[in-house]
Length: 288
Image 1 (spheres, rainbow, N blue to C red):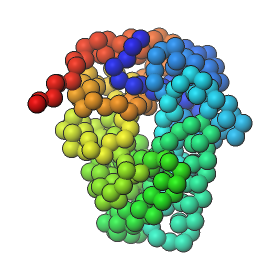
Image 2 (cartoon, rainbow, N blue to C red):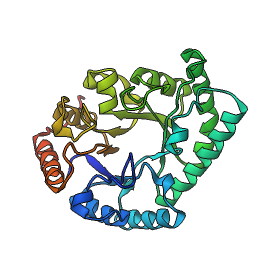
Image 3 (tube, rainbow, N blue to C red):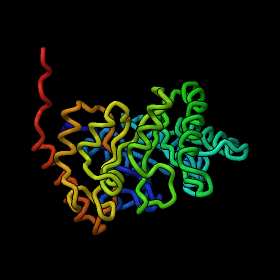
């Protein structure tokens, strides 16, 4: 399949035991999933939980991705227990040390698999006004820009719905956009996740246009339940069409679960995506 957009499957964003095409591949071996993504004609594979793999497994995965010329998706900067802790919205010494330690470890892990994008989440501290936490996050990301530049990575800030993860600092897209614009660096950009945006802010197309200048990665999932594109309330064809219209060349990470896990759903999902692609129009021609 020659895809118009650059799709990426995942190796498990909630658990390494739940890669996107588990039934189709019939194995948890990440290299087998890389080969399957290649067979589908995808452009990449996301290993968000890469920090949970051994160094040897990460290096093996990195070689497979390179051999298949697939682009690695974003890597979560810390284990979930720390990624959801209030580390970025504070200037405390302990938080600073934890951020630095986890970011350096994430960059090392990303390099082993060839990834260049690090996903940044942060919990909120209920004892501190949100405005002060947002200001601190901006300062802390500005400080992290030097590390990102030195290691040629992009720090990708993401807003997360309160249904998925309560008590997060960035729950609304515009708060995440505000942070990214305030940092004002090509090393700090935005993850646009259709499910999180639909739950918290609605009007996915309008919001995508509003923040387009800051978008680094697009993740698609439907709601409720963070399910496959065809199974929820959000019409996905207009979203994909808007990406085509914007001439988006980054990865479209298929970061969803299956409403009914199994081979039938996985095959239907690929067929549905194929049909959506068939319906997409070429982007408008630029004026003189």
